[in-house]
Image (cartoon, rainbow, N blue to C red; front, side, top):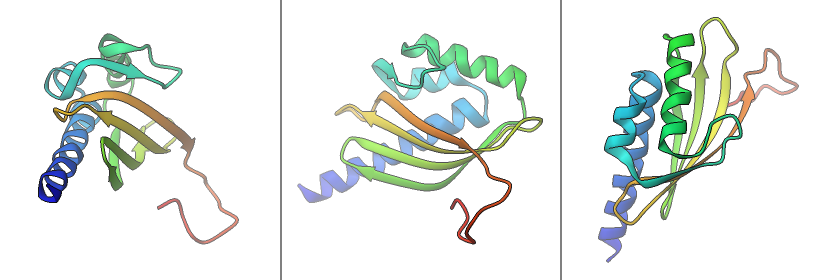
Length: 132
């Protein structure tokens, strides 16, 4: 059984990274939803509408406004049905952001829920440790 669990964690990690890359970097959110989301998608980000359609609309709008945006995965952590991304989001022409995205997956490895916490990338720091 431990091998199956390890396999599920790897599957979940790869699915979330592929999903976010497809939606964010490749600007194909509808395809990302079709391939990687479960029957429902619960959104906790207060600026994006709930559900698959809300996610698609949000990323289509962001893709049109910021066609060169990029997300860079700095850390990817798994815990059961959860995958956490620690990311740098580059928005050319706007501010860069540091993000923690949390995804919950169902038993089939499909994404069904999302939370995030974002802050603008600081220009200076009171310490030498950096954000990553």
